[in-house]
Image (cartoon, each protein chain N blue to C red):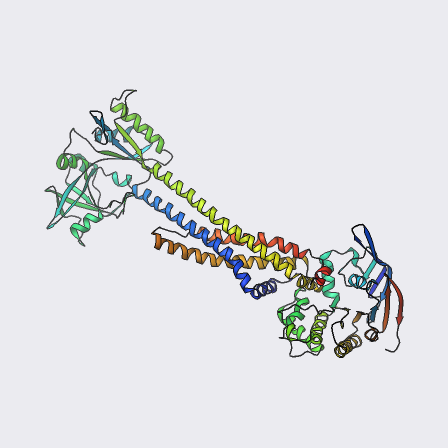
Length: 409
Length: 230
């Protein structure tokens, strides 16, 4: 058997002699691979963005909101009827087996003052579990305890934006800030969370014990009232059962008859986001599939050129056969030519695809992520295209009759 | 043991319903070191016979033993191996690879024999020397004259140390002066190194260089003469 380096040399020479033709043939693969990589980068970018939003919200998250009031036939929208209490939150944690953490929330906007600085921000009254529910760590200081909640102590955790606006480079932990003129000790600073899916700055917040918010900052229409209850389910699989358990429990607690409507709503944001993530994944596959079609067309281009090349070089094949080339020597020569075209096109296509995704993200402002996986897939696929579409011409060449091939003009 | 032992070889082509009998019962023995001219008008079957001798084609009847190997029983790749090691071809139209240097053309048979690059280069240079083309190794066929191209082809036939050279009208495309030079080279190779040369030609002055003349007519051998003292 002929050695591989010699076959490579023969094949490279044949391609080099027809530079223009080889280049144009490669172009089909370049465009195909480039398109696959760029399209997958757009799709991966989109789904990564959604995944980030999901994780910034907190995973397996359910939000229980109070129901809507109706005033003279006009329904006022969810949250207008204050029906949820801290007792509901405690009951959810106690009674619903699919729930792992619960954080009731009473929030409002207030002016926060430190020294000569002041800042208007959202105050969130809640329990220590909020950080688990939202997957939100502290960067310094400590978390308040349930004892703080029971005693309604005046302690606070600052979001990064608030900390920066009030303290600048200073460490806020241990300092006293005033919220609605009431002094609060800063006991911790939260990690940066970034934007919410709606574009809000999630770090522009101050967290205080829920009881403190109820009794000292915002007041309540009835004891223990909260605006919403954030719930973390034990797992993604248990999200739906958690949703059901919460609904059942609250109907019971709120004494809602079988034919009456709920006076609360349970929102499954994670499921919603996962649906969005799922649909971007489908979009990614779709984009990739469309781009693959051009790769396929590129492969057919290679086959076309290889068939022409075999016909053109019939005499050369005859000479090689007369001199002692075996079936596989001839086949290998043409397969390697096709493979070289497709792999070189693949490499160029990867470069073009990566460059294309960078340009796309600059021009259109989309987040594009070129995954190693997509590069490997595209490159592997182009190699496969080369072997697949190169084999038939090579097979045809190897079956030529040496006498006829030698006589071919 | 004769080098070539063709026993009752026949070849029938089938073109649709018509049977064309190209060879009918040809027997021929050729020993080592012979220089045989195969002659005959076109259509006499001499080319078909040469293709069979060269293992490019298989007979439809009879047996062909090459160095006691029954060639008829071999498959495509085994025949390619025989052509590679036992037979050197010289064609009328030279049949060198275009855009490939003389040396690389000469290296070609060794390529399919799996020799190392260094050995290939060394033996190709030796073969180039033996046909008197030193210094032309890097030239492309298009840069060489007809006679020089045929010398490269002969060097290619020699390079794998094949015991047989099959030359099919090797001087058909050359002028008489160059033809004589090429024939002198064949004579030299034949007398110097015991290579068996089988030459197809229809020109008597070219055939005159050989030691034995076999004449074909209508698919059969009509005469087989040894010339003493040539």
